[in-house]
Image (cartoon, rainbow, N blue to C red):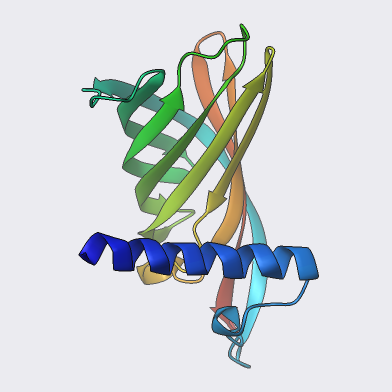
Length: 175
Protein backbone atom coordinates (compact mmCIF):
# COMPACT_ATOMS: atom_id res chain seq x y z
CA UNK A 1 0.00 0.00 0.00
CA UNK A 2 3.03 2.34 0.15
CA UNK A 3 2.86 2.81 -3.62
CA UNK A 4 -0.73 4.02 -3.34
CA UNK A 5 0.28 6.75 -0.88
CA UNK A 6 3.08 7.82 -3.23
CA UNK A 7 0.69 7.92 -6.18
CA UNK A 8 -1.76 10.03 -4.18
CA UNK A 9 0.99 12.54 -3.34
CA UNK A 10 2.06 12.72 -6.99
CA UNK A 11 -1.53 13.17 -8.19
CA UNK A 12 -2.16 15.89 -5.60
CA UNK A 13 1.01 17.72 -6.66
CA UNK A 14 0.10 17.47 -10.36
CA UNK A 15 -3.42 18.75 -9.69
CA UNK A 16 -2.04 21.64 -7.68
CA UNK A 17 0.36 22.56 -10.49
CA UNK A 18 -2.35 22.21 -13.14
CA UNK A 19 -4.69 24.41 -11.11
CA UNK A 20 -2.05 27.09 -10.69
CA UNK A 21 -1.36 27.12 -14.45
CA UNK A 22 -5.04 27.39 -15.37
CA UNK A 23 -6.01 29.93 -12.73
CA UNK A 24 -2.67 31.80 -12.71
CA UNK A 25 -2.87 31.56 -8.90
CA UNK A 26 0.08 29.88 -7.17
CA UNK A 27 -0.44 26.85 -4.96
CA UNK A 28 0.08 27.62 -1.31
CA UNK A 29 2.73 24.91 -0.99
CA UNK A 30 4.67 26.33 -3.96
CA UNK A 31 5.07 29.83 -2.52
CA UNK A 32 8.61 30.39 -1.26
CA UNK A 33 9.77 33.96 -0.97
CA UNK A 34 13.20 34.86 -2.31
CA UNK A 35 15.44 36.12 0.50
CA UNK A 36 15.77 39.91 0.44
CA UNK A 37 19.57 39.78 0.06
CA UNK A 38 19.48 37.80 -3.20
CA UNK A 39 19.14 38.94 -6.76
CA UNK A 40 18.49 36.82 -9.84
CA UNK A 41 21.19 36.79 -12.51
CA UNK A 42 20.19 35.53 -15.97
CA UNK A 43 22.95 33.86 -17.97
CA UNK A 44 23.64 31.86 -21.14
CA UNK A 45 25.81 28.77 -21.53
CA UNK A 46 26.64 26.78 -24.65
CA UNK A 47 28.81 23.92 -25.78
CA UNK A 48 28.77 20.38 -27.08
CA UNK A 49 28.07 16.99 -25.58
CA UNK A 50 28.58 13.33 -26.28
CA UNK A 51 25.69 10.99 -25.54
CA UNK A 52 25.41 7.24 -25.02
CA UNK A 53 21.93 5.68 -25.04
CA UNK A 54 21.65 2.08 -23.84
CA UNK A 55 18.38 0.18 -24.44
CA UNK A 56 16.88 -1.38 -21.31
CA UNK A 57 14.85 -4.59 -21.16
CA UNK A 58 11.14 -4.09 -21.73
CA UNK A 59 8.62 -5.41 -19.24
CA UNK A 60 5.57 -7.42 -20.19
CA UNK A 61 2.79 -5.15 -21.46
CA UNK A 62 5.17 -2.41 -22.64
CA UNK A 63 4.30 -2.83 -26.33
CA UNK A 64 5.38 0.24 -28.27
CA UNK A 65 7.37 1.67 -25.36
CA UNK A 66 11.14 1.75 -25.20
CA UNK A 67 13.40 2.45 -22.24
CA UNK A 68 16.99 3.63 -22.34
CA UNK A 69 19.64 4.74 -19.92
CA UNK A 70 21.34 8.04 -20.77
CA UNK A 71 24.96 8.99 -20.19
CA UNK A 72 26.34 12.34 -21.36
CA UNK A 73 29.64 14.17 -21.24
CA UNK A 74 29.17 17.96 -21.49
CA UNK A 75 31.87 20.31 -22.82
CA UNK A 76 32.01 24.09 -22.95
CA UNK A 77 30.37 26.40 -20.41
CA UNK A 78 28.87 23.29 -18.79
CA UNK A 79 31.66 20.84 -18.00
CA UNK A 80 30.37 17.64 -16.48
CA UNK A 81 28.48 14.40 -16.85
CA UNK A 82 24.90 13.25 -16.59
CA UNK A 83 23.08 10.01 -16.03
CA UNK A 84 19.39 9.39 -16.47
CA UNK A 85 16.57 7.41 -18.02
CA UNK A 86 14.31 7.85 -21.02
CA UNK A 87 10.90 6.38 -21.79
CA UNK A 88 9.87 6.64 -25.42
CA UNK A 89 7.00 5.73 -27.69
CA UNK A 90 8.78 3.92 -30.48
CA UNK A 91 5.70 2.80 -32.39
CA UNK A 92 2.68 4.87 -33.39
CA UNK A 93 0.08 4.34 -36.08
CA UNK A 94 1.28 7.46 -37.94
CA UNK A 95 4.79 7.41 -39.41
CA UNK A 96 7.01 10.18 -38.03
CA UNK A 97 5.01 10.62 -34.80
CA UNK A 98 6.03 9.67 -31.28
CA UNK A 99 7.24 11.05 -28.02
CA UNK A 100 9.64 10.68 -25.13
CA UNK A 101 10.16 11.79 -21.57
CA UNK A 102 13.43 11.68 -19.69
CA UNK A 103 15.05 12.70 -16.43
CA UNK A 104 18.79 13.17 -16.01
CA UNK A 105 21.02 14.39 -13.19
CA UNK A 106 23.83 16.66 -14.39
CA UNK A 107 26.93 16.93 -12.20
CA UNK A 108 29.88 19.24 -12.84
CA UNK A 109 30.71 22.91 -13.30
CA UNK A 110 28.48 25.53 -14.92
CA UNK A 111 30.68 28.53 -15.74
CA UNK A 112 32.90 27.70 -12.75
CA UNK A 113 30.10 26.95 -10.26
CA UNK A 114 30.10 23.34 -9.02
CA UNK A 115 27.08 21.24 -8.15
CA UNK A 116 24.36 19.18 -9.72
CA UNK A 117 20.82 19.64 -11.03
CA UNK A 118 18.11 17.61 -12.71
CA UNK A 119 16.87 18.14 -16.27
CA UNK A 120 13.37 17.05 -17.31
CA UNK A 121 12.77 16.34 -21.01
CA UNK A 122 9.44 16.27 -22.83
CA UNK A 123 9.69 15.65 -26.55
CA UNK A 124 7.16 14.98 -29.27
CA UNK A 125 7.37 14.39 -32.99
CA UNK A 126 4.22 15.14 -34.96
CA UNK A 127 4.46 13.74 -38.50
CA UNK A 128 8.16 14.62 -38.60
CA UNK A 129 7.97 17.99 -36.83
CA UNK A 130 9.85 17.91 -33.50
CA UNK A 131 9.07 19.82 -30.32
CA UNK A 132 11.37 19.49 -27.32
CA UNK A 133 11.16 21.13 -23.91
CA UNK A 134 14.01 20.62 -21.43
CA UNK A 135 13.74 22.38 -18.08
CA UNK A 136 15.62 22.38 -14.81
CA UNK A 137 13.52 20.66 -12.15
CA UNK A 138 12.70 23.32 -9.52
CA UNK A 139 14.90 23.21 -6.41
CA UNK A 140 17.05 20.39 -7.80
CA UNK A 141 20.26 22.45 -7.82
CA UNK A 142 22.91 21.62 -5.23
CA UNK A 143 26.00 23.35 -3.84
CA UNK A 144 26.88 26.46 -5.90
CA UNK A 145 24.01 25.66 -8.29
CA UNK A 146 21.36 25.89 -5.59
CA UNK A 147 18.44 27.99 -6.86
CA UNK A 148 19.19 27.20 -10.50
CA UNK A 149 16.30 27.55 -12.96
CA UNK A 150 16.37 27.42 -16.74
CA UNK A 151 15.70 25.79 -20.07
CA UNK A 152 18.00 23.97 -22.46
CA UNK A 153 17.79 23.46 -26.19
CA UNK A 154 19.60 20.72 -28.08
CA UNK A 155 20.81 20.91 -31.65
CA UNK A 156 21.99 17.96 -33.73
CA UNK A 157 23.85 18.85 -36.91
CA UNK A 158 25.76 16.28 -38.96
CA UNK A 159 25.60 13.85 -36.03
CA UNK A 160 27.17 16.35 -33.57
CA UNK A 161 25.22 17.37 -30.44
CA UNK A 162 25.32 20.87 -28.98
CA UNK A 163 23.33 22.72 -26.31
CA UNK A 164 22.19 26.25 -25.53
CA UNK A 165 21.27 26.79 -21.87
CA UNK A 166 19.37 29.87 -20.70
CA UNK A 167 19.43 29.89 -16.90
CA UNK A 168 19.21 32.05 -13.82
CA UNK A 169 20.73 31.82 -10.36
CA UNK A 170 19.77 33.64 -7.22
CA UNK A 171 23.02 35.08 -5.87
CA UNK A 172 23.80 37.04 -2.74
CA UNK A 173 24.05 40.80 -3.30
CA UNK A 174 27.59 42.00 -3.89
CA UNK A 175 28.72 38.92 -5.85
